Length: 397
Image (tube, rainbow, N blue to C red; front, side, top):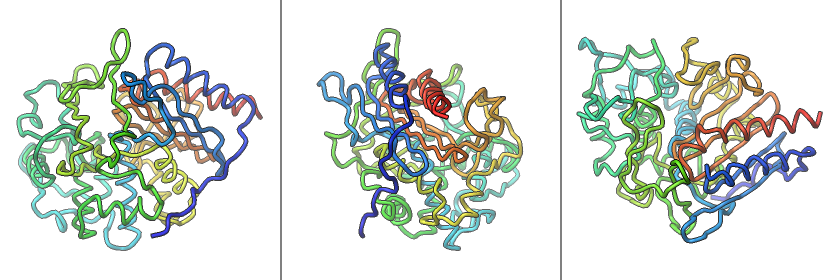
């Protein structure tokens, strides 16, 4: 398969844009809140900022490079969600069809024992009634008792077994009636496998990463020398993330059990929601392909559906003003979110330390991959970078 040219031209940044971004990045490095980062900014189809900073591995003094490979965690979700929507575009999967046709063994029930019907749309929008183990208050929660994997640990089980365990836990609510971030994208991965008739890695490669030339994105990292070491913020400076270490992104939750080695294990099950590795360049290829609405992967109507709030006005915890589309959050109310982003902006991140957003009204895509959790996903750096970008664009008007 021939790899297409990168869908961006090299452009000239507005005055002060690169200086503002570099200052924000340098500040977070100087304050030892991040170890390393790659930041990309595109505007109107032109790449206007490209930067690698800090360390890919601090202890061996390996500098961060533009081609560094990162464990994606939930930055996997837009890739896998797009793969599912390609199947919808091909007429092989219906957004509102029950998934039991393809996954007859996956039949979770409501708390009162009633059966529930789950659709692909509900999996994509996280309205299917599922949860995550790491959101539970302690190690005795229902997902923990069932031995459910969140897709980032060294579980030693397969995807089918994990789904069997998930299906044995009562749904948190009737599908379509609420919103809850969850293992839905892992279930979606199993659905993609059945519809496409191939393992998830091969399906995603055929449907998304291959056609877009995302050569460095997959479920197993091929070159360990390019993979950035994962770090965790603590009081003085970030420490390397240990194998099996549990770190909570939210107060009052048991937290995520991490296996940094998982991305090198060809036998680890393919977690559609958290199991991929890749580069910032690769994710920007996908985001720009969707933003440019060129029909390369999806028709305009499906991209519009992807970008539409699917929650029915439900509030997202810790994200005022945001709803959720098919694979990422959608900004409903910039004032409520206290954000300079335009209404309709797409945004999400990844627990290993990533954030990204697409402001289609301004033709803007920003990807920031870091190797430090959770500063790079939900720390002050995310807001500082956003404000640096919008501040420079506003000043250039």
